[in-house]
Amino acid sequence: MASGSPYFDDLRSKPEVIDPPQNEDMMDIRETVDHPIQNELKPNVAVSSSVRELLECPVCLNAMYPPIHQCSNGHTLCSGCKPRVHNRCPTCRHELGNIRCLALEKVAASLELPCKYHTYGCIGIYPYYSKVKHESQCVYRPYSCPYAGSECSVVGDIPYLVAHLKDDHKVDMHSGSTFNHRYVKSNPQEVENATWMLTVFSCFGQYFCLHFEAFQLGMAPVYIAFLRFMGDDNDAKNYSYSLEVGGNGRKMVWQGVPRSIRDSHRKVRDSFDGLIIQRNMALFFSGGDRKELKLRVTGRIWKEQ
Ligand SMILES: [Zn+2]
Ligand SMILES: [Zn+2]
Ligand SMILES: [Zn+2]
Ligand SMILES: [Zn+2]
Image (tube, rainbow, N blue to C red; front, side):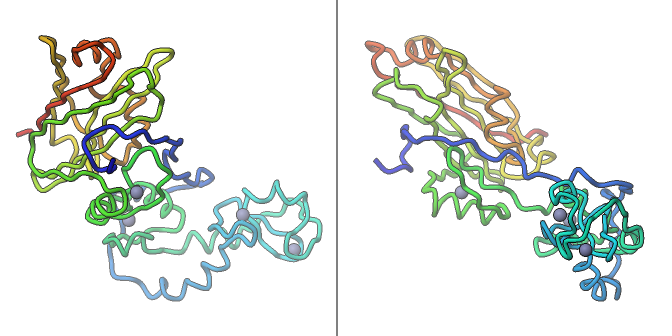
């Protein structure tokens, strides 16, 4: 069966990385996140590349933030690596001691650098010590691939990810704001944390991911369907959606707000922000002899005024 068909596939899901780690060691961060210095690239930006090299930790190669340490010979080291080198300078092997490199910390404070997402369109220039914080919230930062159940590390802007979902994950693409899907599983006893599927809808000039999956809640298998918005949270709030599932004279309706794909698939699922169907209910909806799961899910997406 092709994985793009609107039926269940049994695929194993693996834990996904929820958010990239952020630098928690920053000190003295000025709040310039919402007010970037958007002037022309200053000459000091070009000159600073050699200074930036000085600010690279020789062990982990990350940018160093206060407190920056140095050995008695002047070799520098970041505070994250210091506890791991057993009091030996990794460059000259001398005893490290507890010397702070205030001069380099001050040089760093004088730097202003472009946001690392400038190639994605961000024109902000930030003081060294607030750049990392800005980048963690920059609206131009690329999105992670919204495909669930695999360890996909692809990142990019929305048009790139839409093409990637279609070409590499063979995800079903639909245009229009209403949908009618049938999920069939021949053996509903086999509910693992692993059965799920994704369909992408395009409407209102935006893209939405409809997730449908089975997972184990304590001892009980349940099904969940929810919508994610391919864009930022602020824009996601402009939309609403409804999902309806039923059969056999029974019906459940869910109305919700799509969640931004900035929130991981797992985070949305674990907060139950969607249509949740207990297995017994799902079998009622399926009718028949309760041996096969046949769910018809209809839905609609609309833009709030
Ligand atoms: Zn380091
Ligand atoms: Zn040294
Ligand atoms: Zn930025
Ligand atoms: Zn992917």
